[in-house]
Image 1 (tube, helix red, strand yellow):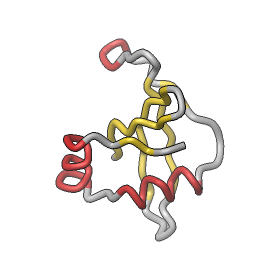
Image 2 (tube, rainbow, N blue to C red):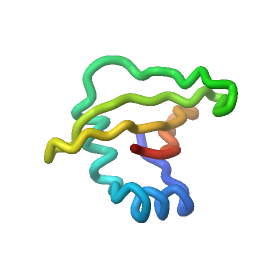
Image 3 (cartoon, one colour):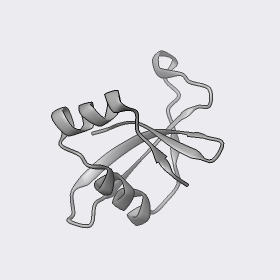
Length: 79
């Protein structure tokens, strides 16, 4: 499934979190376990926002927050 990162989110990832698309893709590839759903009413979306924690190939731990919409994975943020 292709990752979709809006220009605004891409800038935030680079400037605030220093995270690249390659690192996000590595986290998806290295992930174990299930996706978790964000149940906070303040951040409710349709479809629901999901997240997971995983490591990049270099061992950096990231929390990846995304929306799975049809065949796309829309990245919201990473921490």
